[in-house]
Amino acid sequence: SAVISQKPSRDICQRGTSLTIQCQVDSQVTMMFWYRQQPGQSLTLIATANQGSEATYESGFVIDKFPISRPNLTFSTLTVSNMSPEDSSIYLCSVAQGRGYTFGSGTRLTVV
Amino acid sequence: AQSVTQLGSHVSVSEGALVLLRCNYSSSVPPYLFWYVQYPNQGLQLLLKYTSAATLVKGINGFEAEFKKSETSFHLTKPSAHMSDAAEYFCAVSGVLTGGGNKLTFGTGTQLKVEL
Image (cartoon, rainbow over all chains, first blue to last red; front, side):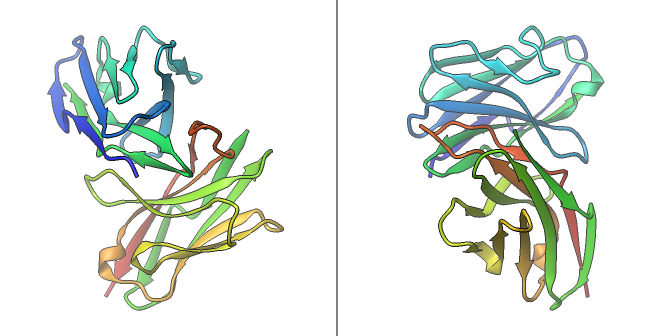
């Protein structure tokens, strides 16, 4: 299965600033997914990112707040914009290959 | 659309006892089902997956799950709990993967506590 490198692993950011999270995969994948896990909760899909097209956002998530890039088949970024303390979460990228899904180790974001 | 329901947000067992974590699914298409484990301050690790082959699926760390279509269930079991099994467990469902793409929908998670 694919190996995903996600960074940063954690960060503490000031409110009003933006953070870009990177996800690098060791093989080419068609679709990449970005999830958010708020404290003590399950994972919620933010968006699906295809190479060469606009990301598809789930209900409740908008591009202005969570812009995504997908420049090639092995890389994607998620930006958390104009952060507030409510954005404090773990953000995970994921890829689908064959009959399974692999996850990055996550980015633990704290907004102060 | 797919969804999963995990019964019991917290489960506590004694070391050496049977572990049973419940998951029921809803899917309009043949489902793929997954169990993931998340240890404190770590990412998600795949325990096992059902992808329409054998209904009894064996995973890592002695865990297994049985797909029961008649009950729309995919419960996770382990015969004998170990202290190291204490973690958060997530059941998840997707539609049949085509070309590697179909979103995964997670349950709310079950926190497993193992006591001496």
